[in-house]
Length: 197
Ligand code: GLN
Picture 1: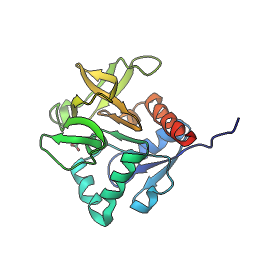
Picture 2: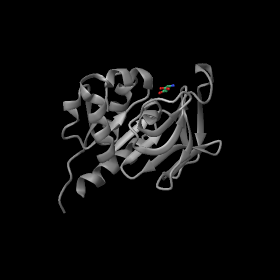
Picture 3: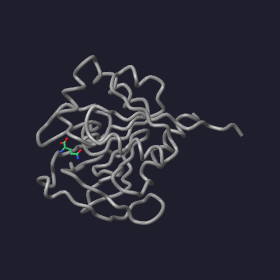
Picture 4: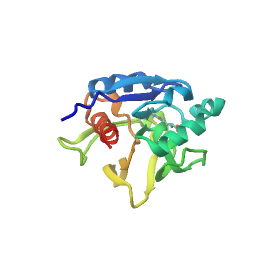
C-alpha cells in the first residue's frame, strides 16, 4: 500500500485567528501553511478560511485578484470556512447582503445571535464520531437554508452550525478554540481523500 504524505493545508492569514487554526491542523496531522497572497494557494491540498471579520477580509481580497483565485480554489479543492470564513463561502449572504465566493449552497445571515456579549460556548450533539461537541460562538452567523447536497453534521436550536458539501466544510462556530480536534481531523481526512483520487 502506498503511503500518503501529510497534506499541506493553507490557512488564510490576512486577519482573524489563523494561528489557532495552524496549531489545530498540526495536531490533526497536517502541515499548515500561512497564505497571504494568491500565489501561495498553488499546490495546497486544502485551505481554511478562518473567523474574523468578513468585511475586512473582503477588502483585503480585492487586491491583486486574490478574490478570484480564492473563488477558483473553493470551487475545486477542499476548503473549510469557520464563522467569517463560512460567510465568505456561502452562495448567499444576508443581514446585510454582501459579496461572497458562492461555493457553499447555503444562505447565511451575519451576526444573527446579537452582539459580542451574546457570544457563547455550547455543547451539542454531532454526527462526527464520539461525544457531543463543544462549540464556541463569537458574533456568529446563522445558516438559515441549505441545498439538498449539503449534509448537516451539527445543529444549534434546530439550525445547521456544521455542514459539509463535497469538498467544502463550514462551521458557524470556532472549532480551533476548543481542545477537541475532531472537526479539524474531519477536514484533514477530506483533503487526504481528495489527494488519493
Ligand atoms: N461577525 C463576523 C462577520 O460577519 C463573523 C464573526 C467571527 O468570525 N467570529 O464577518
